[in-house]
Length: 350
Image (cartoon, rainbow, N blue to C red; front, side):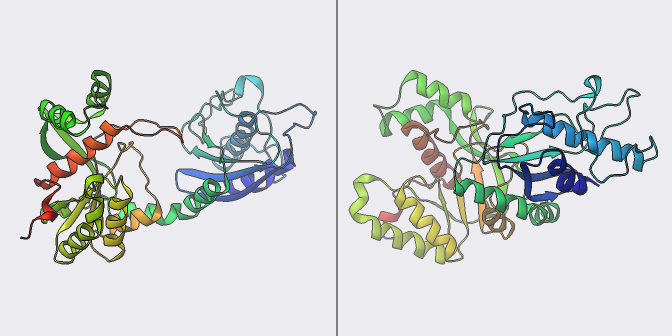
């Protein structure tokens, strides 16, 4: 029923709109909505995306009530999407107006909603929806891939409940805040200010005075011999030696741990993972309650090849938001603390 409303009714009432990729899950749905021209209603007025979604929800509600015997369906047409009467209309805040040739990835959650009949019949949807307008073809491809992978990702999460959900405060780094401050003073004195350190301290996960980490993946990887991977500019001429030593240790069973910030760290960690060696990554943001990594990363986590750790609470970041030097150095400190080993280990002969 929801699929029919999605595929047929939206286009019937708004011919300039096309629903492309979509997936309907047990309690939510995702779809790409393409606007081929300015969106206008049948009376010729410019229409807000929120009104389109509200009408879609209302059409689903009418059929849901009829299917469950709560009302009689007043129309036999497949398209029942229409604008609800004013006192029934869902309230949508801050949704974008759709302009020519735009694409929106919208998500709605099935459950209790704000769209109600005069007799307060139980609605099908929760309030509101989430929409993301892709800014380029790469982001659009990512959204399409995410939609198509939704059922498989759900199956992986259901069969790996302990590892494919964020686990809170699972790793005690034993790092105390004063020690971290001393480390940053040595590593990046020019970039460390009272304000920047206060920002770092406010974001860090802490318990009993220690910096903690949340985890995503199989925590058992921490039971192996752990080696930090941090590439310094002063050691650039020795990179090939560092890479060879890291990969040799990984081949012998050690787990490489890195924030994967510099190009050298990325090269070593990516090569290790592609070679089939498990790795641990320190993430630069926290895990939200609903956290879905990419399909490749989820596969690696499920197979026990990748463990994600983060010492940060989650914070929404814009597309162009970067991280500071002190922020990166903090993650390098965490990588060494998790391993209980300094990042210059690879220079020794043993």
